Image 1 (cartoon, rainbow, N blue to C red):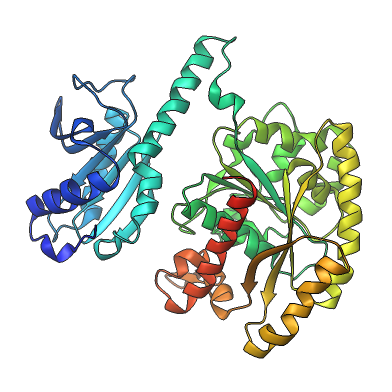
Image 2 (image 1 turned 135 degrees about the horizontal axis):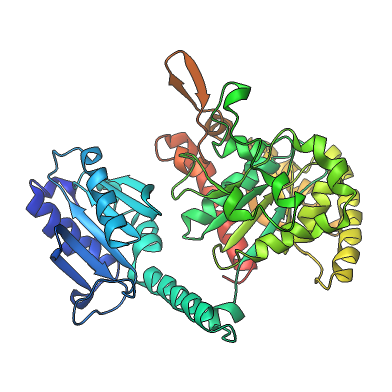
Length: 459
């Protein structure tokens, strides 16, 4: 089924043709799970959809997770209706709200007493983006979240209760590591996180590199002067410094207009390099990231850790914490010469993991990255480079390939002008591809990488 926004000439047609005839059926909502023109006190909602059949209709703290859908005239500016939607979601304790005028579709998520934009597309692209919308507010997604919510309530009310979700926690932690710099490690980390998020997975990106490249790439460095630095006092260092306070919910930031949906980020900071001696002297710090990620295992499907290009303390913490390892490499001689060091490092880490009762890290494989897209190179030289990895170094080689395309660097170097000041405004390659046709090849490569990862971990 497809939707044509040109068919919507007024608010009534946005309601009937977009919401009733297209969105609700595509999202899996049947007539017994949604209501139109709902009155709750002084609030009047256009549509309210529930994760499960609600008969009789009740809206309270125990209701299944619900979605408010508000339709506006095609000539209405949606910015004028954000305040009212925020009032609806916060007043009624509804987690998601969809706002549309037919020409544009937005999805907001309630966050305490405010709402955050988590999805946006034009009406003419909604048919192409329907799977992304399903992963956010589809009935199946809502039912899964409702199941987790009920489990959480039961756990709180009964300390002896062990939920099905707890037994089957599926969060996967992946370290992106190579001791050679310049192989595309950060590019892989941030865009793999964005691609997994695009596939409907809840993703946490952890930057444990003092260069803070992933923090920058995710759009969190929004300051020009030291006095405006809001990352110095809340970053990865503070997770490692103490086991008693500063947990992930205290540190985590939402990426800034980086991807759709946005990802959560534990930022790094340049001062991390000054703190390494203090942290490395305290043995307990090596297990703190493990413990603190464990506390949010029901909040995320994937944790991606961007690591430093070294064998230092921070790299040890990352590989001790991760379940899986991806080794980005341009497959050139200098990068290859570092692979034996990576192999030996992994062996040392696995010994330490065994002492802690952790199984060995799963090496997903070497990921060919920053590869020249030149056709003759790809045809003649690249196959020989790939063969070296499996034959000489006995490492698994991933099927996915990330080519060194101009669009990848462009997406990371977008800027925003505010008066005379220039602020970084980086975008994931998937989001950049929405406005830049030349970026679509790179975006597809990262979607293929995400799918390969999902297959490997069994999702």
